[in-house]
Amino acid sequence: MPHVTVLAYHALRSVSVPQRLLVGATVAYAGVFVLLVAYGRPGLGVSQGFYVPIVLAALATDAATGALAGLTALGLYVVAELLSGRETLASTLAAGTGIRLASFVAAGLIVGWFATRARRLVADSLHVLDDLLALNGVERDER
Image 1 (tube, helix red, strand yellow):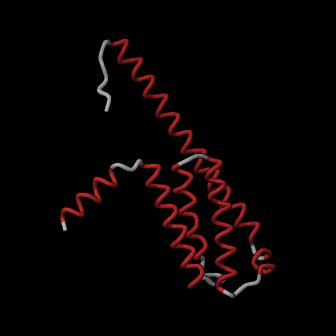
Image 2 (cartoon, helix red, strand yellow):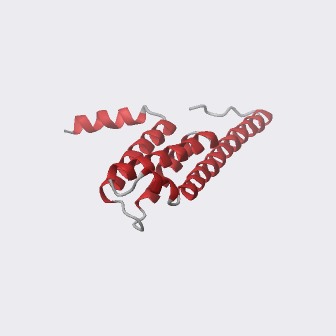
Image 3 (cartoon, helix red, strand yellow):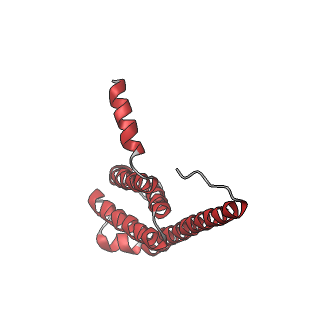
């Protein structure tokens, strides 16, 4: 069994962090969707779990994809409500869907924007570090 664990570890290491985040977002979307169909009812707050995949997708990409992740969460919410049989399409769309749309999309936009900004700041700081090391005559170890 340890051989399988080593293979899984190396397979995981070969996948980039953004790809891992996107896989995690996909798994989280599926998990929240299943929970919402099975146990969701008004006031329970299961749909709030959609913030996890929205944030994961936005961290892995950018603001636009974060907003798209929010729209995806809203679509899955509506489908889950219809599949559960507790609501009709008209009542599902009328009951707070606008607020969910705004909050899901805003969460994706904000997290995606900050993630993009943070990546840009890190890249800029590495360029400055390279310049400082070049001025000092030191070579930086590239990994």
